[in-house]
Image (cartoon, rainbow, N blue to C red; front, side, top):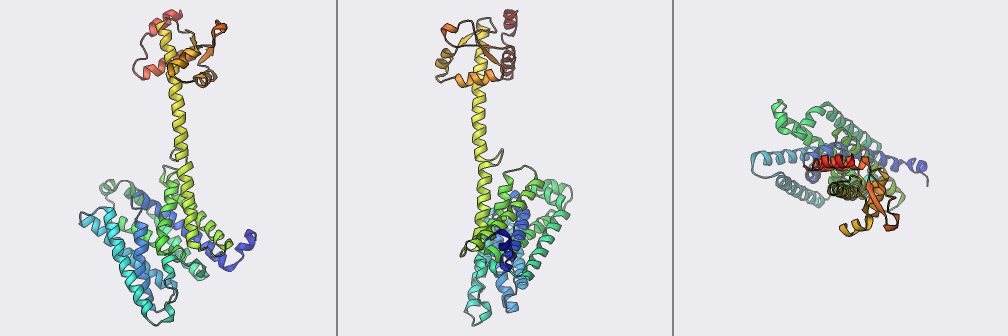
Length: 388
């Protein structure tokens, strides 16, 4: 089945568009949660949304999406305010406050869910799908709701971009500027709750935290700038949603929500390994390059010091002697220095083995390197005199 015929399917198209919208909003809003060191916020809000879903069902008496999402938003926001109250009015740290709010509200949700299931009401069938998600139940009217929430979330982020940026990176500085930091923190947390509410029908209460954290964590590996991080997080989130939905459609029997989360996790893994400057593979390569550079500079400075000792800046050194001194093969190091024009092979004593000597550029670079270490001027006059 090709991609066009796959997307022409009514259900698959709805699920793919919905997953893309979820990924965009989760990536953008999750970036602020990760940078504020509140990565558990998505986990807490997703679990805290369960009592709101149950209350929305009890009030309306049916599984209409909008009332359930509004209930989830209210309970999630209440949990966020409860968490902020614990942080600001008690001695609890952020992680302890998040854990307390999560367990309290999720316990209420489980009690309400048990109460609903005990009632002889056929309308409650499928309500437990919000625990693990049921993306296949998405219909066009749901997409309009999800699209409206995405536009609202992105609009608020753009409107308060400067304020959110300052509050995220320097809360005390924001206070000195006169920003209403308390209101901005509540607004930011409420926006994350809004993203969580969007994802409940896709990945459910249990896995929604991953959609908040994973795209932002992956984006953080690639850049130091907030603007680019938010863009990449939205891109990674959208990509996870689209690819996960299509894989789930192609491989019948795979739940869409977990596959989307696995795709997001794969992007995180690739980013952790290969992102420039921060990736593990990049760091390993940099370490190797730094080791090579250090070895080259050590050899170059030792050649320079031997020239000082013998009052000859172009003193010729036998390669085997340097091998014995370093306890290792130095051929590769000599070749690297030769390719940079810092040393050259001596033709004076070919019968006694390979000899090397510094070039004028090599003498200057060795002198500058030793000077940076605090002893680069020692013997400089002697070398210049010997060279003359």
